[in-house]
Length: 169
Image (cartoon, rainbow, N blue to C red; front, side, top):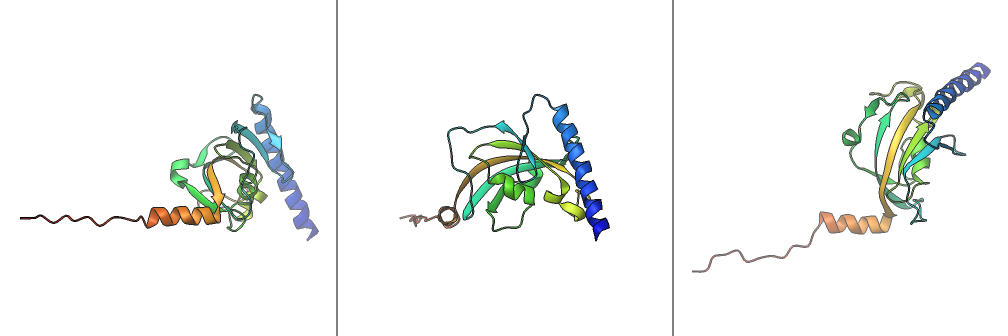
């Protein structure tokens, strides 16, 4: 057990060193270390809104995933628009925490170590084991689940008027 703990500590230390290198190489970008174990930098800031998503909200966002060298793993188009029921759905731990610090219309670059990304297993597709990631996230909007349900009902069951299309003689 102790060997496993020591191995994980070394793995995390190595990934944090990789992230530190990325931060050093991007001197013009101000990365902030979060208390949750990830780093982030604002690409677009919204200073007008004070609200952020919380449990019971639905967050609508776009994101792309890159490796720490900037190579795209999943593009924004490939992933498509995302709908996330805050703290009620199982998503990458780093995203789950990162979305909760965002304001509407903000775009943030997140640097995640593998243990808060896809961990030991990767995503069983393009992301391998123990890969730290750069995720670029844009929070398009968020709302309460009740408001989201109303919006979805309005768009999926539009009330249409029956029109008389018959031809009169």
